Length: 338
Image 1 (cartoon, helix red, strand yellow):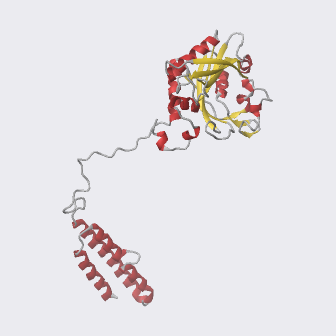
Image 2: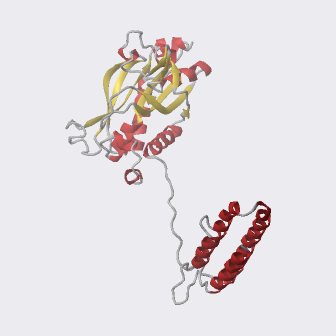
């Protein structure tokens, strides 16, 4: 056995001298120290030896393993760097410009929310947030939505248990703010909302809203119109027109749907605006006195207005996008355009 160990050492010394590259050194290391290498083969012989010889042979193998490691490391250290092989161009040229790393950016919906917040910040509105898992009281009762209203059924609201649900509107934040703050109140409430809608080009079970609320003495419908007109002109452009259509919401009275002239056809009529020249973007109205009663505001002293818009819809109109699902597919070819 001693003779075989000596032969292995001499073979290694001869092969080490022929090494010319790191790759060859790694191959030689595997040949002698790998799982199926020379030293491993010697180790397999241990059980075949007499018991009294095994300890000595094991020590010899450990010594051999150490010698092989030292010999290979010394040889590797003496090899020339492979960064610039003879006769070849350098693999790394420090004069070349660096590779531009991928830099992320905000999602288009986040960009829209930030733009909306910036416009309303200029009008003196603060930003308020609230929980996405809500109580039925804040989502319906305090907003003057009756118990028999269709939106309170399982078909239109995600219930978690009893009176706990995923909020279907960020109007809930308005109630929470008014409970804690006396007038004047001037806030917008951006956030995610949830409704069990069938997913298609214009609907999703999760989407984003920005609700607004202003409460003070002497607030009128004219103030509402002025604030919304300023937002629309700032966000969509000075040439975009606004119109109000009578509507109904349980938490506002009077109420209105707010339309803008179609930005794609300049109000002339196209498939996006159903050839009417107008596109609905949000709902608004004066806060119903019953909502003030729920938060213990004096409805005789204070008046206010509220409005709500879908962020996805605003973004689609701004950029001419025709499918809401594009926002959630994480396709970088689409998202990188914004």
